[in-house]
Image (cartoon, rainbow, N blue to C red; front, side):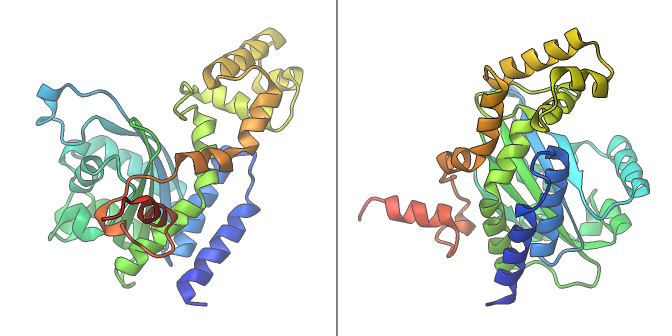
Amino acid sequence: MPLYWQRLSDALSALAIAPQHHPNLLAEAIAEQAACALAGHRAFLLIITRDRVLPRNLKSEPIQGWTPIHNYATGTTPMHQARIQEWMRTRVPLNDVPSSVAIARSAGLFRVLLREDLIEARAWDQTPSGEMLEMLGSGDRMIGALPCSETVEIVIGVDRAIGQPVFNHDDQLALARFMERCGPYLVRVLMSHGLLSHQAPLTPRERECYELLLDSLTEREIAEVMGLTPRSAHQYVSRIYQKLGLNSRAQLMSEWLIAGQIFEDMLPFPLHPRLAGARGLRCAEMATSTAAPV
């Protein structure tokens, strides 16, 4: 078995035993296994959402209304995280970050972008992201993005350390295969945020309550853990059911368990040209099998 297939197999095996009923830990595990599958030294999982941008504002809005709302990263210490947050707060806006613009401009396609796609012929240190990459000890970055709806995408980025080989086309296909094969786990992460197409977004406290529901705690136990009155806990639970389009805990658990089927119903995703016809990629194979004969 080629090494990259072995790494992919090992990463997916590790995800199968990840804490499924703890969405934040699951998201961190996905990022960690992405790094393992691609021989990277760190990785991150980012959820981005899009606000409506009026046509007349498109030229002044290079990122097309896309904004990161949740970030799960590996290989960063609390000090790194604090420095990244400070960097994002004080440096240039996303509209002026070439890699962010490249991701936004290709939205709607299942894609994996290499350095030349993200920053063209420039070196990383010639871009606003260079300082952050150097701080993290990263010499190269590859970004995969999966369009979950017109307004929600999941982004997985993998870094390689300074001195490691840069990512190539084989790595590009490997990340696409990884993202496709961990689709059910990605659906669960989205579900925990209320970001599937039939849901409404959950607040941080509602997400905390949602995770306790997954852990089979009673409303009284949820009230104790969250420091609420039983009445307030019941109101939280009712709002969660309403936002997720559910009527009961049984339905909540059922939807969680059928995440794989939900992901199957989302296939195939529209493909970036570089992934079209890729061997071992279901979206490419499904697109080929359904293509009209010439």
